[in-house]
Image (cartoon, rainbow, N blue to C red; front, side):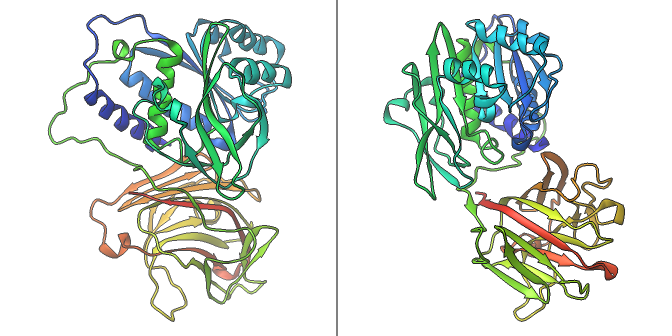
Length: 456
């Protein structure tokens, strides 16, 4: 997520221009310690982007401890005792007693805490009861679904310092909450677009001399939103009870014609492209077989490698952010892919007319996540080090004019920019999944969790 760091930098540059100059006397750096261990939600990439921006824009010291989902090790956690602020983005870690003791000691203090997404169930049940209920003032009741979420701000919360300069944005994948603590103040409420169920998604808590902030909205797609990021930056300074202006580094004057590069623009609301039941909104093209099994789109040749084709959207898209999960057969050079802005001629068999994000095996020369036009523009996961064979893989594609970004399982593998793309490559077109039995190798590919938002 190199683009996330640059996007954070663009936002903070704009905020610095709109804010008063840094104070003449700079206080001792604020020490922030980040705990990362929520692989599904790409916590490591997100927190590294946050760390880079904080260190660049402010007089702060940022340290990190990196783990995996349900990890049993949290390196560098001793530095937590020197920190002035803890930011938690972990999921059900199973830590040894000596490491967990550092976390418990911090939580027993009155120092501030920020919780992102899975922080409500960050550790073992005993520690979670303290962190979620006592520190955050929450009452986590589980995952509420994977549908888009409409986010609103209660009238009384609009004047809260954490919401200053924060505009409207929507998200997805809502968590269910029970009754919050009386000391908590709700800042945002989410409404699941499918079930219409509502639940608090962002709040602050002031109890036992401590300030805490929690949001369940820290998911890929929302994290890159400028308004979400403004809210997070506001929260850092509010819970720390520090004056942001006093910690801001002096901005260096721009030189030449340099301009901030916006990699991911503010997008419209997320839309699901697959209802989990049938191929409504999709059109098969060619002789390949496409069907829905167990809530998953399955494409293949039924054993005949000569059968090939596409499954195309009925809607067209130009600039967008697309997220999905895929699983692919491990058979020879069999491969799949995602066609971007495709515009095949009416009645054709559905050939590629623009960029393709490949899905295949690097060992077979079918580089997963690679960007292909008439040749490889970028080989993505060339050594097959990121793709997980015969497992679900998370793919994220951002297409904005001639700039194509690809993340595979939370790792940025393509960041390609064509400054002068051919007009046909950037015009509106359909998205299409491919299934192709290369060199006589038939196989199958599966897709699920397909969501898109158009970029402004």
